[in-house]
Amino acid sequence: MRGLISDIGVSGKWFQVNVMRGLISDIGVLGKWFQVNVMRGLISDIGVSGKWFQVNVMRGLISDIGVSGKWFQVNVMRGLISDIGVSGKWFQVNVMRGLISDIGVLGKWFQVNVMRGLISDIGVSGKWFQVNVMRGLISDIGVLGKWFQVNVMRGLISDIGVSGKWFQVNVMRGLISDIGVLGKWFQVNVMRGLISDIGVSGKWFQVNVMRGLISDIGVLGKWFQVNVMRGLISDIGVSGKWFQVNVMRGLISDIGVSGKWFQVNVMRGLISDIGVSGKWFQVNVMRGLISDIGVSGKWFQVNVMRGLISDIGVSGKWFQVNVMRGLISDIGVSGKWFQVNVMRGLISDIGVSGKWFQVNVMRGLISDIGVLGKWFQVNVMRGLISDIGVSGKWFQVNVMRGLISDIGVSGKWFQVNVMRGLISDIGVSGKWFQVNVMRGLISDIGVSVKLVLWVRQQALPDS
Image (cartoon, rainbow, N blue to C red):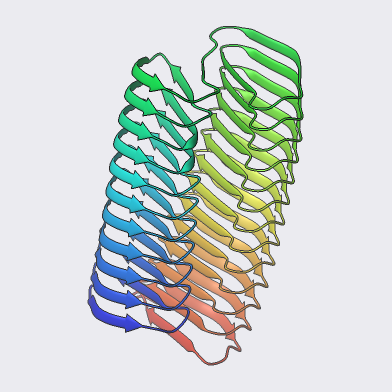
């Protein structure tokens, strides 16, 4: 608490640093499962060559980070991320009201999520690159990889050079200019915007459909796409590949898809009764409803702003749900790499039996969570976590000004970080258990762990 951590060399496994109002600098890590949690601090000059690296920062600065491992993730609220070099796989950056600049990426599956921020000077040569920005600016992007996608709401995209395949840009009330494309499968979706100075030498280029009706469509080919503004799409059967539907203020219902690379983008609409057995499925909804979705493919992602997600069954891999001011309930997941990001929402009745499960909630509620997998993590700011049953490994809970109660854990490497909160009724039978609490209360803890037990408490004056 309010300290300095510097000049740390680590070659072991399961390394973690928790700092409040402090500085972390000059850290070299060669092990696995490295995590840094900082509130109102600075993280700089970090070199990491291990796996499963994660950094959580609130109102801080992350700079000069070099990463060559796998599964790297950075979560920042009201902060700055700059000068990041990454050559690993599965890299993700989540920023709220921040700045991302000078990022060089050589790995695969790179994703950047920014709300009210700026993304500039990004060089990417990997695969499966995606950028999601709300009310921001994207400029000076050079891309040499495949499956590149940019989603922007009320923003600007300019000076983009692309020589890969499967390039897509989605912009609402924005500007796209000075785009040069040499690859294949190029697509641009713009609502109430401007597209100018575009040079395209690839194949399968398509732009927009406005105020129309599409119904009763049967498709057996490849590279099928539908763009509708203020329309209706219904009764669509698709058995090809690379299927995409974009709807604004419309309805999508009764869709059966058995192909690959399926994506649905809806603004102020309804998506219901969707059955998907392909790979790379993604749903983007703004102020809408998603219900009764069955997915058995891989790389499934749902992005919802001010909406509802309910009754979702997922058995694939790499499942992610992003919700802003919404509700997520009745989710059953048996895949791997599951992540839920919620801002001012509710997550309840979640059953998870996969690996690498993570839940990030800001000002929300998490309740009735059953987890059987590995590498489970919950990050909550000003929320409530209750009735959690965990039998996996590497479980971690981070709460700021919240409540954690009725937690049963039988796995390994369990950790709880709480600032100004309450932890009660915790039963732990795993290994490497750690609890960090600032100005909080810890009570009724039963521990039978081995090797490491570190319980640090700074109680309230009246505790």
